[in-house]
Length: 408
Ligand code: SF4
Image (tube, rainbow, N blue to C red; front, side, top):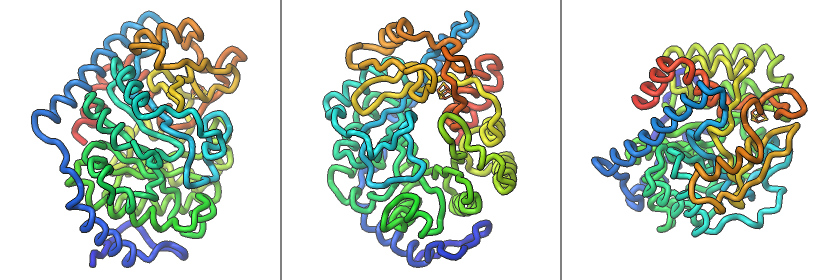
């Protein structure tokens, strides 16, 4: 039996029985391992990464020019694709960026496999990386096929954000044998470890499945060349649970991404006012400084966790909905209704962005005025765009960040 050794994490009442979970995870990993395709390595893999980096460098040069000209319609770093709306969980904090919960929205109209592949081809004309989201993306039977397409198109990194609840079943299926080999970064939502809390928060009977699957994925991650990350929404009254997840992730070598809970398009004031939250923020930043596996840079985490004013640049991370419509320039905009533009009407991101810019100019879109977005969304992804915008004005800083990312 695999015993987990903890140095930072301390179990609390209601946390899982780690011996049982880790032994279940170990058995699962042993059963699944022979069924999984091995990841590509060598020249083919390096060509994929180099192609993606070339796109990113090309965009950076274009973005530098646009910034110097005072423009904010920047070429994308990656695109977010809400592949579908349904979800098998009902998380209390779930939000589609327009105030609705994904599982409660009409799930019809999602792109089929062929249209999904076309979307990937169009977006790849200018986008180095793709972020598959939902709803719960693993509910799509064709997800492995779409991810293989993304890999063949040389997207890098390929990111999937999931609740992780179904992998023990999915990875047994022949259609899913390529999944782990093709994904670069797997982000699993884990907001607490107290099982009763998770049951209520996620509205699921078996939250321990997620934690066992996470342990199973951890066993497979290094051989499958997958970077494994937990995404933790830090909620009022549950800061101690977020701290437990941080400590657990630290002990297990899993990446940690903190997400302070938002209320509407701003950080939840109850989170920010909580002294435990302030202490947790300091711990996260200190550990990041000491080299812990925490997403983003020290500067980015300091700014995110303290809700510092940010330069939000949404065209760096265009958000495409389940129906192939791009919400431009920002899906979360509170004051101005975003334009919804069908990506499949275009052959390239250049043509798409030229059309979109004519509908709404993204320059000076972020701000409080009635003709601006009216938000200050405290999301890690926004602080990533803020870092990049900073990097356009301070190229040496961005070079250091990129070097750190590549090394990791
Ligand atoms: S801060 Fe404004 S532009 Fe940025 S995500 Fe929120 S609403 Fe959109």
